[in-house]
Image 1: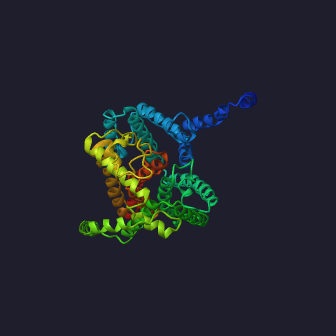
Image 2: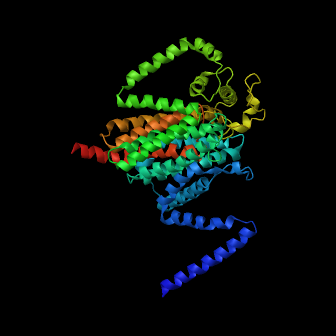
Image 3: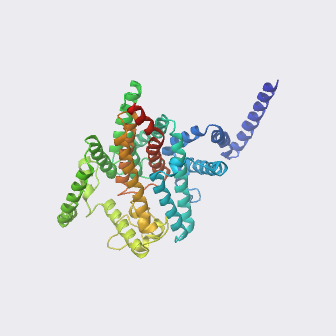
Length: 478
């Protein structure tokens, strides 16, 4: 009787909702239709939390910036960032209630490096030229780190959850690849439309290419013998799809980053010692210093600009005489350097570069795509940007994260026995390396698109180190 009564009320509320929503649609009010989705997400937050996290990962490559929709100039990605904000609030409430978090994670060197960086961002937000902008930047960084570092480490206690994390993003990103390639085909695969055919999901081809490159190495994880043949075939097909996407993104920085990842793979595979790499690095630096003037002359003579032909597009990478994209990047870096020189310690404030760099441009460095108002984006570097926005310590604390991740990650890779998790650590490091290489030329960690995999892959390395490595080493010893 009680069960029948509950079913009765479900039908009543359903009919009321359908009737009310139909009336509002006629009145051109469509937002009530979002109520069932909202209730489903609230239900997942309290009863199926891991499912909510996988949904956020899946939605990340498909999220849309409200700025693209001209919604009051609000710069927020939906539905991901509001959901991350809600998850962050739940995390802090849970933390206050339980008054504890795994100390092994908190004391881990990578965690300490991340916390040092966040503390410095918080300090420079208080001294910022635009405190509101900087506090929004800080808040976004915190919800990215909370969701996809701290919470993710707990999700990865279950070993196979890393597969759900990778597949969730890859499935969404694959949809974007098909959308972009089909869209580009209507323009005969010309390189100019390739700069924006991935809109509204990615702002431009550089961010799109960066994430394609970042996930490309992860696809090779699924060739491990533990996976079923069906999974290996799907992974092979996805590698083909991603290869086409990377080529047709016309993103030179993505191509360079994948080349760098290949070099790193060979270093790990052939166990090249750090001492050898150090000697090689020093030798290359000295050779570069002595031949710098000659190289500059050669680059200045290169007049090859971006082209539909891949060989010519690759050649344009070193064109600093007429390629607008390369010249504008140099203009942004020069502006950032001058901003740093004026405020070397605290900087101008996190997230403020795009609002402050205009007066620091020099007329002889500006290009055809420069603007006097300086409203065309960021510093195009994960390293130079923080230098201008948070001073010298801003750059150094981010570099500290990178150095500690690769130091601890490499040590973990070398100590793990051959097997699945050793492979996972390797490809996490390769994927992260594509981004830190790409970060020399662009910066996207203020977006969900890059932050979810960046912090997520770091969390996976830490989780394997803290929760799984000792078990594997113990079983190997036995």
